[in-house]
Length: 470
Image (cartoon, rainbow, N blue to C red; front, side):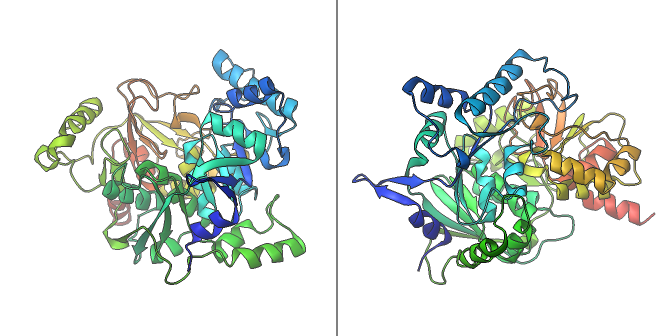
């Protein structure tokens, strides 16, 4: 009896060393401009080639601008990063999707939507949110720059096998609750270190009923509770999503692949190192109030009172509230905001834009809000336009930007000014993450949409109730 993780892991073991370290074969390697320059430089210094270039894909995303991508990049740091990635990819014969390429976008969006990411694979990237790809039934995790070099040179990586955890979300979700809310709820209950050392498999009725893109959102955030990665067993949802995508198997190869993928599930009776169960009915739209993703709560709740916080955590709790200029015990609904960001590898897919657009249709963006709506890829951008979502957004006062990581992190021009509040559908709310002094409230697309319309943190359920009763 084996878990899904064990089945995939064992199939990729090349050798196990006496100390328990595993030489693990890697099926797919993604590179971006931030963590790869030193790795390629290391190969060059040692006179090495990329061992299997067809299994590495380079994609520019962190530093790219989200307006006027057709113009020369003004920021010298960003320009150097992007130029270096392009030069390295050319020199070492690796596929590269840079600015202007129709397959460009955020690496964790581009990989699944083009069929590069497939069930049963081992996948790495020099980026912590590589856990996203586990949603398709893969072992996917982030690696450091030295490991990027190791993968380029050998197509293998040295790893210790992680412990296993199953998180089951039983029951059905209430109206207005998104996949982002599931993830933020789990993190709020687990804390940012609650899954450290584990590879997490998500299961249960609420998980089975999600779409493929919702699963990508959930697994994306696994790293935020300390997990090595997250995964969901592939099923018909996965297969239907993958079928016909550019780099997915075709014809007889497709039938053979599905036959194998259908064996990728946790056997009945298989044991995990840890099991946790949550009730889907207890989850409501979520927001964060502090400076890590674990400082989250249901939107109808109040920020925890100081006397409810463990004494060992009070100093960091108070520091976070001081940074956010929030008050312990106070509600967060109604707090005025300045920015809304829809996008990132967490919520930059077509379904996120459909949710946001359906909510704001017929309404108008609040004048005090600057909204950055950033597709996760050019394919997502094309779908938005093909479905007419851009016209609906424009009528509501919103402007669509060009694909990229954007305001998820302050590595490009999209920086939230110091002291300003941003309701963000991204994955991290660390101090300065969206710009020096920026204050980030993580939320899902519906909370972001409601807040963009009202100009303040708003429960989307209350907004729906109010507008439908008029």
